[in-house]
Amino acid sequence: MARIVAGIGSSHVPAIGAALDNGKTEEPYWKRVFSGFEKSQAWMRETKPDVAIIVYNDHASAFSVEMIPTFALGCAAEFPPADEGWGPRPVPVVKGHPALASHIAQSVILDEFDLTICNKMEVDHGMTVPMNLLFGKVDKNAHWPCLVIPLAVNVVMYPPPTGHRCYMLGRAIRKAVESYPEDLKVVIFGTGGLSHQISGPRAGLINSKWDKNFLDNLSKNPQKLVKIPHIDYMREAGAEGIEMVMWLIMRGALDDKVDEVYRFYTVPASNTAVGHIILANRSRAARKSAAKSKRPAGKIKRAAALAKADRVRS
Ligand SMILES: [Fe+2]
Image (cartoon, rainbow, N blue to C red; front, side, top):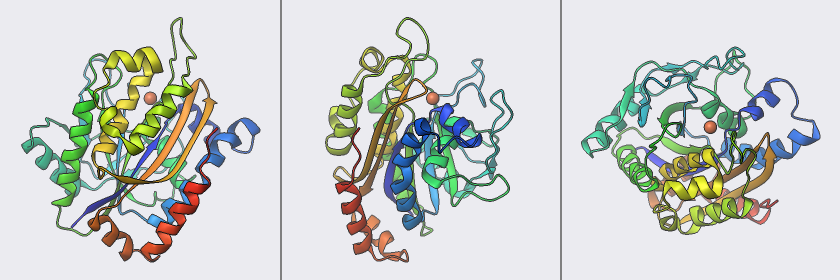
């Protein structure tokens, strides 16, 4: 059966993609950001997922403001990078997993989460920037190292879904994945945030205390996060801080108790707080999957412990 082995939280700041695409990763400002993902890329190379479910929000690329689905699942065979005003990013076309995506759609819709099904969709920086941060730079004529199922969430026009709704959708996605018969190793990303506001009198707002508390609870006590109302996100984390509800879909798809493999936090990137976390499932199914990878599960656990000891807290 398919199984979710880990969840990844990552900001998706568009300027990070621009820095990568324009060869600025060694500049001190950007090196501070990219160096925080080096251990994560090593972890990803070891983990070798077959499929990544990537929860992100579209920034008026695939959906205009004329039509904004609350939850939209990508069921296509491929998802081209969107032109966000400067031409498409020089990254490979994202290859999907239509069979698993359709299975997830059926399972969660029958569980009363009414997803929009997208059989054709372009994807923007909300998805491709976290992919670069976790998979590294990939030539646009090459292939991303795993298949991807995009899940776009409306956090751009009020009302977005509640944190609790997101968390429960994560639970339903996990149930769907675990009822898929093929033996697949799956990871799930929650992207966006952390605190930031890009316009208005509070433009540039960053609240590191809030962000770090969010990461602590995401790791150890997610139930403290699921009841946070929208207004608290907006007051404490800025208007665009509401993107953080997407991380709760990722968290809902994991075990109640998880191993925190790695964490990174730095400010700012452009005008945004960059947050990143990797949380590994402890369940028997996840361990079984880890044991099937080339590297023994024990080594993965030791690597996780070493990474945890090295955790960057800036
Ligand atoms: Fe965003």
